[in-house]
Image 1: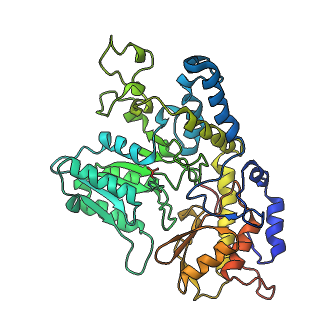
Image 2: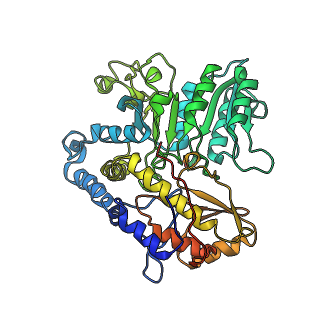
Length: 438
Ligand SMILES: *Cc1c(COP(=O)(O)O)cnc(C)c1O
């Protein structure tokens, strides 16, 4: 696709965008001037779908009117409420429905998964992660290592970007697996790195790690709802995600987990148990049948009965992803939005900033991380004053994440203007290659 820096071109892309009507489905926060912000922080907290309020109110109404009977007689009975999320969630991560469960929050799920899938031995006790990893993941991993009586300083293997680079190179991950694979119990990587926006080749890493006897867990916090995923086909052992970023399900939303069928159906696997992971057929016979009978699916990792009021927003959000046709069409628009942003930012004077997100579209999601060389805080303040919501990571990185459900090409154009990209017609239009979604 050939891009142009003319404002009319951005408007034309919006007019031709077959997903443009989804923007109206969301509440767009507005500034003091009454105009919507340019909301590029869907990687932090996605916007609220207008349909959400009614679905939450429905559950409040059922509680008010039916009390305990809403468990079975509510409009969407609470007893099986989580079932209504399963198929849509499975589609987003490329899983079979029995491999997916919506529960808890991300870090909690990471611990629950590690209880089953990080079972270190004297010879194989290490965990491989990328750097920088999200702090919560690092805390969780270090505490798991210590919990098993190992030394995090020795057991945590970090693959870092090379000197002068920002992203982790695939050969360096392969080299770490080659050199230390025999000692690595678990490879725990982000699908998309929160800081750089780098999308890892999950299939390739999973194969290489499993060849050396490692298990593979993926943190999809920045990947779900952002890039297409095929966890089942990639043979990933487990994955976890949160639902308040690209999934637009609200602050502290109910998160999710994937357990590959070959583990999910294995009722012998050790796990931390609670009544909601028990076979529903005997769940209420607990005092008669005190032994835990795991249901042979990812559900067996659920512990408590789910928070219905927090699950209702997920229903609203997942319905939108289904209606949009899933990640295929959304990724196609996303590739275009982000490539357009890149094209426009590249036209700014080169000393202003460096995009540290991978340049190849198949190695990133929608986010661009912009390292600002001079006066980063001033640029961020200028963006804020102009009605842009994006985020700033100390000391000098601005993350901007245009999302295909509610952002527009014209917003991308305006963002680039504020960043200092020229829009004069004398600069000829450039070329950017778009790859097919994967
Ligand atoms: C957002 C995010 C989290 C947040 O964890 P919670 O348990 O949901 O608070 C964890 N890990 C990564 C990689 C994230 O991006």
